Length: 220
Ligand code: CTP
Image (spheres, protein in one colour):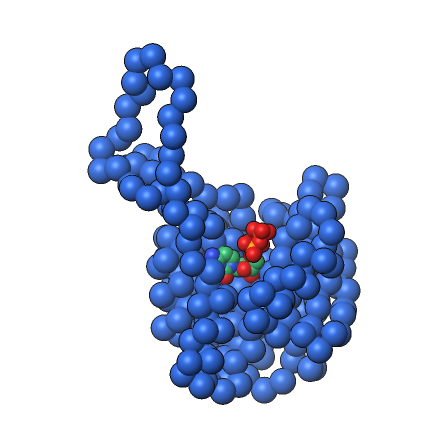
C-alpha cells in the first residue's frame, strides 16, 4: 500500500473522577511506541498521539508527538490529523467510560455509607468516528487498523470489531497471564483483513512484532 502519513495512537487515556482519582487501564504504550518507531522507516510523516504512556514510551524517534489525556481529547487529535493517504493504527487503549460528573473537590468518605455510586457515560469510539468522517468528507486512501485485545474467542471478537468499526485490518492479540498481552512481555498477534486475509506474527518481542506488522501492511 501507498501512504503519505502514518498516525499511531498509543497508551491509556485517563478520565478524572475528582482532582486525585481517575479511571484508566494497564496499557503501557509499548506496542504503539514500537509501531511508531518502525513507521518512521516507511514515511517521514509519523504522528504519535499518546495518552498516559509510561515515560520510556513517550517519544519515539522520528515521530511528531501529540499528548492527550482523555478519550475525547484523543478523538479530537486523531480526527484533526486524518487526511488523504493516511494509515491510522489505533494501538491506544482509550478508556471506554468517563464519569458523568468530575468533582472539583476531592470526594470525601461519608460516615456510614459503605457503597458509593459512580455514574459513567460511554465515550465515543474513535475508530468509528474516523470512518464516519472519511465517509462524510470523502477522504481518499485512508487505511484504518484497530487492535483487539481479547481473553477469549479471539477470532470471533476481532472479526466482529473489524466489521462494526468499518476497518481495513484488525490486529488480534490474547491478553491473559499465560498468553501475554499488556506490558513488557513477548506477544503474539493475528492480523485479519476485511478481504478475509489472515497473518500470524510471533510470539516475539513487541519490537519485532511491530516491525513485522508494518512490513506486512506495506506489502499489501
Ligand atoms: N478504540 C477506539 N475508541 C474507543 C475505544 C477503543 O477507537 N473509545 C479502539 C482501540 O484503540 C482498538 C479498538 O478500538 O484499536 C478495539 O478496542 P476495544 O476496546 O477492544 O473494542 P470494543 O469494541 O470496545 O470491545 P470490548 O467489548 O472488548 O471492550
